[in-house]
Length: 212
Image (cartoon, rainbow, N blue to C red):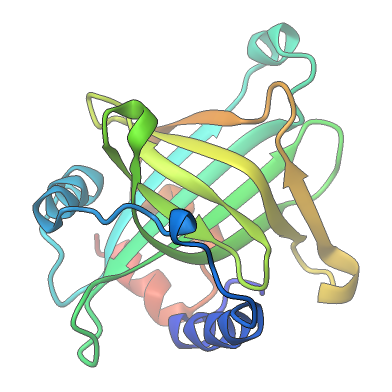
């Protein structure tokens, strides 16, 4: 999946869900439900504005300097961008969340990206902290995105997430970012939405971001 429009993401995820649901899920695998009030509170912290008819965006960026990389020699990632989007489609009763992730490696050339759909999850080991749990379709892994206490940073956690190299055919570009010793948790700083425009290909969406 390469930065698809929302309707295409939803269709692909529905197909993958139908395939993966052939075996029954165990009750203990079901996520703990998030209190709607806590979800709205998290959204306001994430997007800094109530979600309305227009899409809401939150952009977070980190470019690791030489000093940081020297202190973390096993870290594969040299730069990361996260764009979180929320919208209220007229046909849905709930908000729809999605993510787009941009990755640069310290030893590999090119730009890599991923995208998928998100929902609120509870991090029970952190005192029921609300996060966004985001997945890539067809068992492509995913990320969790939380917030720092001052809301100025996103805390991205991952075990593995499928990524693609830009400008290459999908069959050649598919890869995975797998968490190693220094690639499990990333702290990204809140940035102007324009900093994440490289993650978007849709012209209408780019125009909307320019007016944010």
